[in-house]
Amino acid sequence: MKHLLVAPSLLACDLSRVAEEVADAVAGGADRLHFDVMDGVFVPNLTFGPALCAAVRRHTSVPLDAHLMVADPDPLVAPFAAAGTNLLSVHVETVRHLHRTLTAIREAGMRPGVALNPATSLATLEEVWTWCDFILLMTVNPGFGGQSFIPDCYDKLRRLRALADQKGWPGEIAVDGGVDAGNASRLKDLGADVLVAGTAVFGQGDRRRAIAALRGDV
Ligand code: DX5
Ligand code: ZN
Image (cartoon, rainbow, N blue to C red; front, side):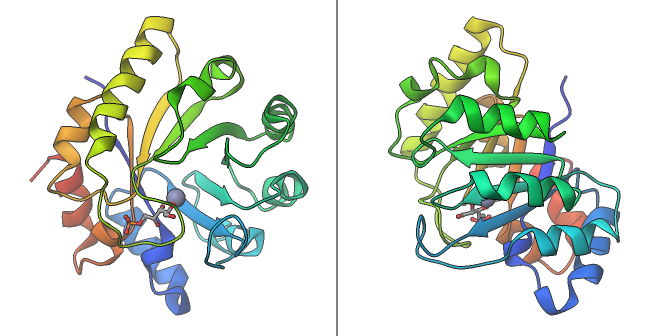
């Protein structure tokens, strides 16, 4: 049985105490750390950039996973690589030359991922499978933490898993948005490999317990 990975999103942590928050999540069993990078253009919110990854990199060796919700990700590939980022995902809705961007991410030494909004068809992946190491299936409209999971995304995840298996695709399926202890086991059963969770980890006092609850261990 594959180990379900949990990637807490720093969007929901106390950024004024980021080193302590990261240490707490890592001690609690976080498999990687998720950075929600927003530019105020692709999504109606503005967050942080590679400087935060670089700062966190100095405090932990767990993989850093940056999710670029930006209109123009290409100029950010090199800065995120230099910051010590390990996984970098871009949105299929905004990248003009997806092959070029995913190749650039890999050549920069990171694992490329493709993010899909809830309204974006899985058909957009048809040419893309072999160029990416993971798919980030958005289960809320990107832009904010703490939103409710969109129930139609359960079936989309089921169909994504079936497509990936049918192709023998070796990558990971990550689910992002509104993931909590109440839906985590269903998401795992439907084929998720990675659960990204902000509120369900950093919104809880006991992060070890919160991560264990997402894995179904408590
Ligand atoms: C949404 C982000 C998510 C979000 C998850 O735009 O991509 O990663 O931070 O937060 P929760 O788990 O609170 O929905
Ligand atoms: Zn995200």
